[in-house]
Image (cartoon, rainbow, N blue to C red; front, side, top):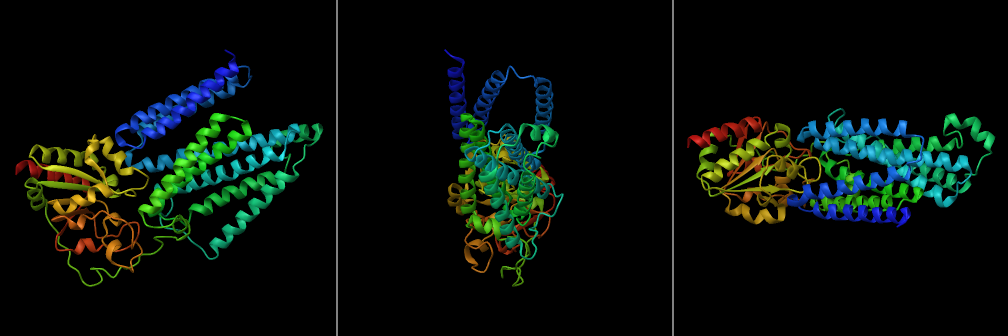
Length: 479
């Protein structure tokens, strides 16, 4: 069997492993296996790549970089807190987009300098640079917002959309110009300017700079409430950039894997937009959450909040038949998932049925609550998606909302003047008793008041979620 045939076979096996891995990621029960399958495929293609470049003299440069990157990646994955997982996902995704853009930039210099530049190669280079740079810069802004290095609210300024439109038009114009008019340069000129790398085309670094600027301006006006959608969208951008780079390098597995990531990210983006009952255009350009908006709910009408105590809630839990935990970002911040699992175990020992209600956009990244609860070894059958768990709320004795806000706001159902009207929510207000764990009466990311907190069947347990859950556990054990 010829080496070229072996390479093609390896690429096919890698592509199949990526497809199968993504398929397994559809269920929390098989997600870990899916990650392992995809990782094996990645290891295989890295081995093939190493074999193909075996004759290179650049190993002294390649090996140290791989070693450093491996150490950084391993340490980051092992030490990052689950509450910071969205930030890490955004950062790693940005690195992928930036890598695709840098590879395309190097290919542009090589193609122009060697005299092999042609429109059928240059167009893919331009797209890879554009999409990869936007993903890189946008992911860094998303990281900064999630890490609270910059305000999480939308940052807007006059004529913002017009500025972005002009910037995009300039990028397209320069990209088309470079694609159509780039000509091979003389050997002497290339040799003289080779240390400058981009001197072969003075417009190219301008093109790259504008692409990065577009990435920054693209994400800055998007608020924290929409970060799950944006992370998913930027992930699809990275996949598309990788696919474009695959066309430049004539690498089939890069094209396939990039297309898979791009397609799956796009589908997930659409599903999450649908889960919020908003169009993707509104998510990107609506500056949602830029100001606090009143909903005309119970707070505006002088509604009454019903504070409660640990002792009262513990009695409700201890003698309930069905308890549904509703996790939100507040649980992630408090790092209370392990304590919630301990409380659930204690309730189950007393014969109480326990479920977990998972809203598609709860938290700050797709599947954030699933990841947190999986870390605490919550049984997969107990994790119920919104459509599956909503019919269970009317028969639940207690619905315990832990740091969730907008995803349980009944204003989305019955207040047409609310900014979140029409957004599918978890119907926790239909439970016999709702216990809400919050630090204060502050609004969620959407910046709207929640009438749930003023309903007669809603009890507010104020304080840090982790401390409250620990106290509830101790009190339930005393019942």
